[in-house]
Image (cartoon, rainbow, N blue to C red):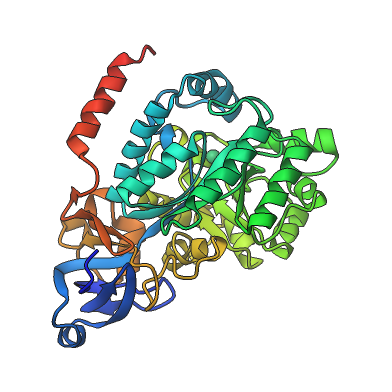
Amino acid sequence: MNHNGILITGEYLIVSSKKAPLRHGALAIRDGFVIDTGKKEDLIKKYPNFERVDRPSGLIAPGLINSHTHAPMVLFRGLADDLPLKTWLEKYIFPRERSLTPELIRLATRLSCAEMIRSGTTAFVDMYFFERVIGQVAKEVGIRAYLGEGLLDFPTPSFDSPKKALTETISLYEEFKKDSLINVVVAPHTPYTCNRDILLRAKGLSERLGIPLIIHLSETKWEYQEIQKIHGKTPVEYLDHLGILDERVIAFHTVWLNERDMDILSKRKVNCCHCPESNLKLGSGIMPLFRLLERGVNCLLGTDGAASNNDLDMLSEMDFCAKLPKGKNLAPEVVKAEDCLQMATLNAGVALFDKRLGTLEKGSHADLFIIDLDSPHLRPCFHPVSQIVYVAKAGDVTDTMVAGRFLMKERRLLTIDERALLEEIKSYESRQAL
Ligand SMILES: [Zn+2]
């Protein structure tokens, strides 16, 4: 860590999705936090001893927060495409997951972190197995993570019972509670793969430790109908009936919702994480994003696992997020570029109970990414947020910083040996019999 501080200057600085971008902006960083923002010439005078990082054609923005990942699933990217969720999970994913080992999880997590850093993501909310290993890798790499050991009624690759996975959640919490980057959440998989007892235990733990509860909810028509068949209630009504829904819950997908469901989500202040590309690819449907935003629901954005997306690129996710509701509602004015950036930044900070996340205001975490505007597809640049949401690709990101530390500088990953990693992945590839 540079105790003297770092001063980053750019062509534009987006301090927050709620503020107008600052032309010739700069920000001063010390000990992992933003200590000042302002005009480049003012800050250069104010902080003469700070290490300078100048990006004359750079657009500096708050780091993107991927609110729904199964990070190690990058190993299954492109393994089985163009199938419905249930077939895809039961025939292709679950059998592969049974043979996962901590070593494979370690390799896969490094690959996912490399991809996220390269596309401007500085934090991710993960639900998977072997989260202890994922936490160790995230810590080594220096990326911010929120980790939930998956709870399911049946044995998982890491634990043979959900009670053991719950005990692991407590143990992970104890291990990482003082860590500045790694956070632990409670992660019951879905209302149809977790029985009532596990759902209630998960809720109890989330309350006792004061940590978020993350769950897939109302993702497919099958789930929507199945839960009604078994419990006589929609998935949202069922969880509400169990007393699970409140502002500490992050519900992934929420595609299948009736009016009453939307009212409940709004009333209980549930955070809804939109995963447009995964929902489209699995043919699950389209979340009623605009309707939820209208009701004041705090909406987030995530990619879901790379096996159903098939990447972890939040820049392209924002593009889908902005365009889908326009097509669905026949209204180009709904869900603006700024709204999508807010879902990928500030709103995640609200859901994760850390107001220093998703913004570069003074006092915030110094989590950011920079894109180089000097590319044919990014000029002219009249509206920087529009360039980020509608144009920028992962390859445009030049620098990514988490907690004041560069994880990528001038397109070079600093905490991952990318060449060695890719060789290992190619060797994994050649061992797979499809
Ligand atoms: Zn998922």
